[in-house]
Image 1 (cartoon, helix red, strand yellow):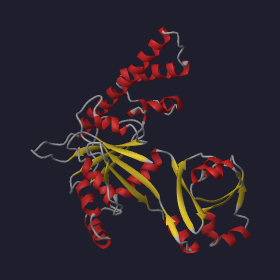
Image 2 (cartoon, rainbow, N blue to C red):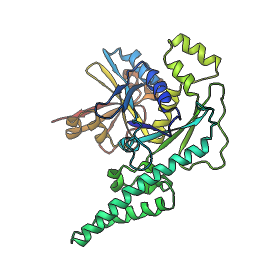
Image 3 (cartoon, one colour):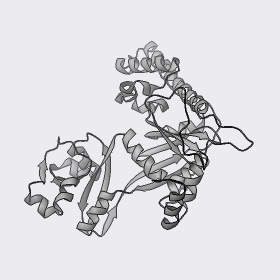
Image 4 (cartoon, rainbow, N blue to C red):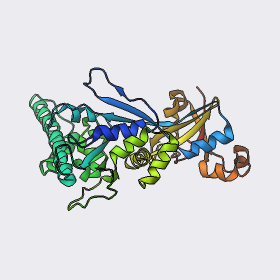
Amino acid sequence: MKLGIVGLPQSGKSTIFEALTGARGEDPTRRPGKTDQRIGTVRVVDKRLDFLKEIVQPKKTTYAQVEYLLPAEIGAGPGSGGLNQARVCDALIHVVRNFVAPGGLSPAPERDFWKYEEEMILNDLVVAEKRIERMDLDLKRGKKPDPDEHNLIKSCLSLLEDNQPLRKDPQLATAPKLRGFTFLTAKPQLVIINNDDDDESMPEWKLRPENVEMMMVRGRLEKDIASMSPEEAEEFMAEFHIEESALDRVIRTSYAILDRISFFTIVNQEIRAWTVPAGTPAVKAAGTVHSDMERGFIRAETVSFEDLKAHGSFQEAKKAGAVRLEGKDYLVQDGDIINFRFNI
């Protein structure tokens, strides 16, 4: 699961990136040849996994991970490197400045949001127009285009030419045949209002964007907290009325906007969390663990986390009939602990 951190210059993208990636002590890396593109991978702390550790006592525990991409600042506007780098991401974190910038520039978060939104719309419009041009050219050469794809791209053009993001039409934004185009405005989006240190409020907007999540973060404070010891961080957070770190809030919202869930496996003395889309069949979840498990899938021995916690152990859960044998079409639920039975 990868999220790209985007926004106008001086919005505090680097500060938010460092606040997120520094909170678990991970070391962000720079990608060679990407002109300072930065990648940070963080653990998804899950109390359910901690409970499983207590009752299983495994030799190894592997948490799920989330990857954050900070694109390089390469130009601006349609075709800019930063926007194109973000196309590979599953979702976008759009950082909007709500503090006085160097030089005394007052914040205008609503204006800045819509300005960058227009850049992304224009970027997507260029992609859609080029695809239509290519399809029309193929038609002249006697190659008939896919009618479904052609209609979908035409629908995209209609929205984009009306200065509307593709996410305004959720069915269009998630159409499988459009996935390869990696449209920016089709991606789920979390808007982070980057406030000053002493500002705990969300700004008032005349027009709030549709189909996006919004969150207030005091970026500089969160960056400082990310570099502190747990004891110092707890004291600092209490002083500034921060009940939960920005990282934990962003991760939880990231899972929500991408409709992701977690399931757990216990194999060879290792407890591991896996992230899959909600509604994933058991056989596909097995393939997430290992391709052999999907190919030779027989059954999924499953117990929900809540049932396991209620009974206190796997043995007691089995006695109570809470452990089930599910087939390949069973839709994995958030918190399931699964032992995949397979044969190859």
